[in-house]
Image (cartoon, rainbow over all chains, first blue to last red; front, top):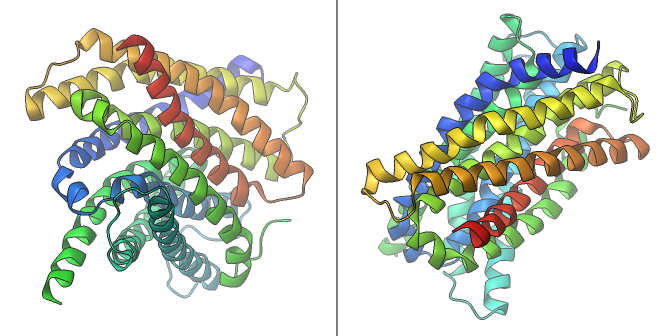
Length: 193
Length: 186
């Protein structure tokens, strides 16, 4: 293949997915803009936002890429049987790594902001938000990634091109949405005690 | 070379990378926090933040996933004359030039619809988005090629390493480039 062939193929494959993720990114931006009350109620949350969103992208992007490569190599079949041990292990690892990393981000952000003398919410609040948001978005993203990659592959699409944008789009939208739900839940629970 | 598919093996390959990247992202979060006042003053810039970062990360991750599969299939060579590398780089730049003006217009329109805010002109937001997009595409290509090459040299599975590194570096660059451009143009 010539440079031109490769470029045209890569461009055509990526454009529809990038366009879809653009819409998701704008929605995430608007939701973030409407979350100012929660951001004010939990100082330090804004600093956490890039880390939490990136963790979704990292963990579930890697899960998707792993599945895409395995499909290319014929290691797994493009259907969910529930009994596939490899697939189950990959999904469990993704969820565990996602929650662990989110918790780590909350702890580091707390100490970093305390050290810098900035205003920061109590540690249990930040950690609670990170865990709840990590669990909820993780479950939804695992389902989305596996179904979309399998469905795309069965329809003859290259799963490589689908994974990145699907994960970033759904990761951003669900990431911010579940962050909002997690903050409200944790603040409500904290208010009871 | 590919990681074995067990929770333990995947965690051992991924978790150290994830923790390091989290520290990098927290740095980007601090930068974002320091610009909060400017973001609140120009809401269309605030809406631009996630979509610019996300699209930069997407450009990088599509490229990284394509290179990773070529690598696994054995069709990738790291010669500067490699057609696969050059073609993918050209496509990345062309994609940025296509989508970033739409992103700028979309961010302006979304802000206008939600809050009626027109503190920045449509033209300004489109130019900010396009300039950021072109810079980010060039950076995304450089970062992806370097990360894939390093993974290859160290015998690591690019699926585990390259995509997270590329997406995160693009996130951080997204914040930095957007604000660099905003300082100059806004």
